[in-house]
Image (cartoon, rainbow, N blue to C red):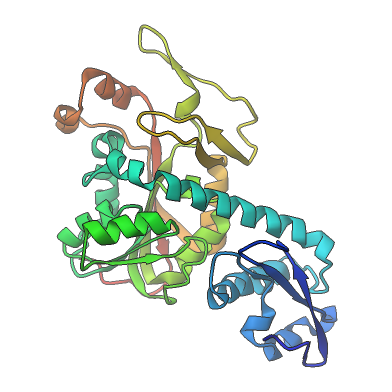
Length: 350
């Protein structure tokens, strides 16, 4: 139980989702602006928190929102005398989007296993995997986090290359599949926006392969990535190219591709695409301009050390399933890839 009074300051609780099976609570405290830091130092971590997440244990939400309230709000010079009207709607919206996205990936997990198999889909095999492995380098002996691991095929590939791998995904069904298909490997149900099962500075390398466009909280995820890396550690991030929405592209008879925007490219927006291929559910993803990703990386503290727009190279033409897929890979920019570094003493890369 949280105390009603801490260091002489009143603690106020506000329900976020009253009546929900996943009860959430917003915990605020009052402090005079000139005494904010003194009060914060005396308040236990669990009380400093703004939100007890609807789908995470108390400890992880404490860490996640301690960073948001203490680092985020104070850095922006916002007083800790917070009115619930100012924040409840935002927190409730973020929780709703996170729950909706999590439920979606649980629904499509079995179909996703069909999509990626044990090698990844054709786009990854033809275009982005060579860049991913070039950015990752020699992983033998490294402690590697596969963030947003899905059904675990990439975790297995990393382990086959000698890495000590942990895979995390917020979809319970995805993790159940990964544990069944790859027994003996380490997989955890965990959200990329908090990485509650991961200690600070635990990993040499983090890989998030087609993950960031699917998370409602980009900055939260990137901050968590930074936290769990050792000083000098690297993050390899591959995600769908935000400048060229493949779902809204038309191809002329001569092969020319036209991309259409139903809203401003510069607008952050939750998008819902109709089912494709063997999938039966609409796809949820989150559009942001490319510059927003760059700003999130820099804000978290990362140095951007490499960038690529993956495309098929001649030595991989033979891997295309058919001429159409090969032609698409030659002219269509499906993804972007970043290599980031956490400043500090270099991690031991092979």
